Image 1 (cartoon, rainbow, N blue to C red):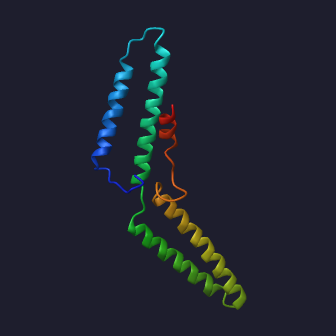
Image 2 (image 1 turned 45 degrees about the vertical axis):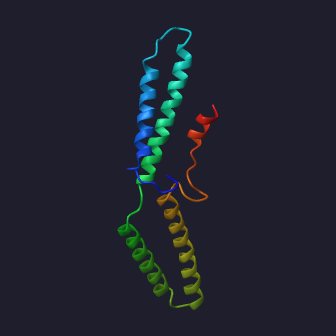
Image 3 (image 1 turned 90 degrees about the vertical axis):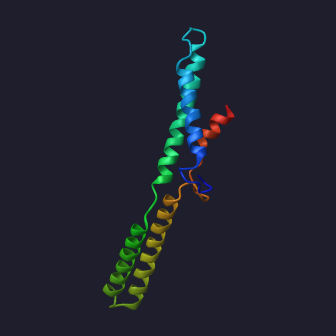
Length: 136
């Protein structure tokens, strides 16, 4: 996902079928008293891995459309213009207010960009659940 692969990529179908097959295999194991804790712990870890995978796919699909970006630009530009017009009585206040608004709008754009591409960049969502399973 960090490399920008689409959901139609065969690796997603293959990994899903492997996880489902593994869950079915572990859930149909004999329930003898000495093996039950092993299979239940393993089944729980596989279910956590599948849930993490589903959450990552859902997060990667939840992007921001171009219409939302255009609306954000129009709203922020019109608000900046309104702030500049309302503070025309004092040039210092006008400059201060517009600088503060630009700072806030820039922070809003940064947050939106960070959530639009959740698996790319230094503040991305890390695959900690998968890494903990690999370590076990």
